[in-house]
Image 1 (cartoon, rainbow, N blue to C red):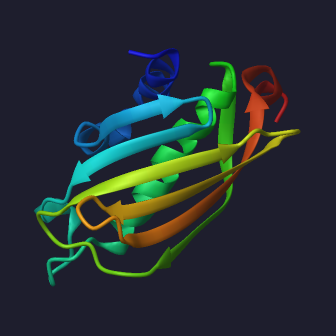
Image 2 (spheres, one colour; image 1 turned 90 degrees about the vertical axis):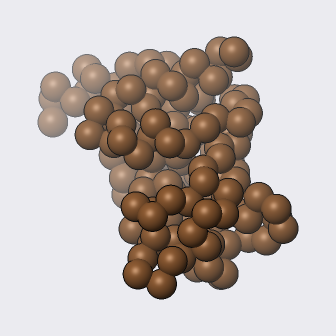
Length: 145
C-alpha cells in the first residue's frame, strides 16, 4: 500500500459520519494529487428510476476530491468547501460499476482546486464531471477563527 493510499484512508477516517458510504468505495490507485476509486451502484445510491441519484454524485465529489487534495498536504491541514460544482452528462444505472478519477492541482496558496470525472467502468463514458474548490488552513489557524 502506497503512502498516498494511506493518506486517503486517514483523510476519510476523519469523516465518521460518512463511514457507511466510504466503506463501499474501493481505492484503485493513489498518487500525489491523483486518485482513482471504484463503486458498484446499489439501491441506496440510486433514485426511483434506478439511476445514480444526484446527491450520490455530489457526495462522491465532496468526499473524494477532499481525499485527493489531502495527498498534497500534511495531516494537520484542514479544508472547507468554497464551491462544489457538477455537470451531469449521462445516467449511471443501478448495478453498474463506476470509476471515479480525481485530480488535484498543487495548491500555491490557501486554495485547493480538484477536478473529478465519474465514468462507467465498462464503456469509459463520462457520466458526471465535478469540481471542488476548497480553502485550506492549519489546526492552529482554526483556533484563531
